[in-house]
Length: 281
Image (cartoon, rainbow, N blue to C red; front, side, top):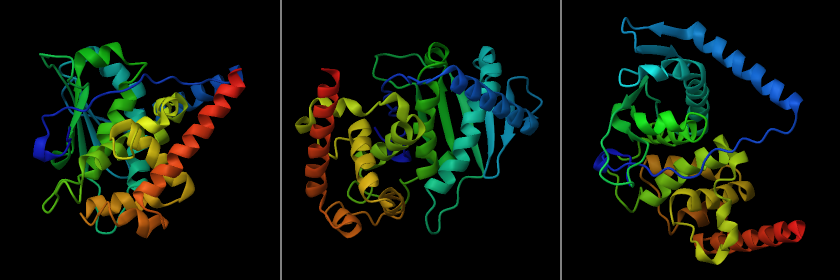
């Protein structure tokens, strides 16, 4: 699947459910306080558009427009939970994904849409980066407000901020596995690490390859970043300016080839799996 313009009608595949971990009543209380604070912050920046089902939220980076025309029952949820998270992560992603010559979008549009599905492979959300637009499938979101709704949107928001597929992009200098892996890295490793949505690779370390895309590649990226901080920022920049070369990038950035990093990653995964098994026993 490509979320870029070359093939934007292909939709992103959602993965696991968000499984927030709450360690204590005190932590829960603290989280609720943060949530309420976020709600107040959004209320202060909400601008009604004159349409009962549309509103805008200002951030220090971009104006966010939310259209719930196809799902008026989700407007309150969008204002109280969805918009605060998106507002926070637009700002975070602008910092995380900054690169020379890149300017973040001035406006990002989120629209709930009704889609009649012919099969189960269509995803709950998809992006059109050149238009800074994210579409959200109404029926799926209604069923996943407390599950994957936010995570799947953060994945698509990352694609909007990437906007990799511009003039000069090819499958060699902007491969799909890398762009999708990076979007899932943002989602599973940075946005919702507590869900451990990539840790299934530990069950069969030799089965997976670094360029298998989505969550597998996200797990690999998380491993590399933990060993060589700053690598993901350089990767994002290389994919964006189309200078990425899989045969050279990793060696230049980390001192190791992709295959060497893959071997280290697998070894670390086996060690982690063994420790987890021993602990369980």
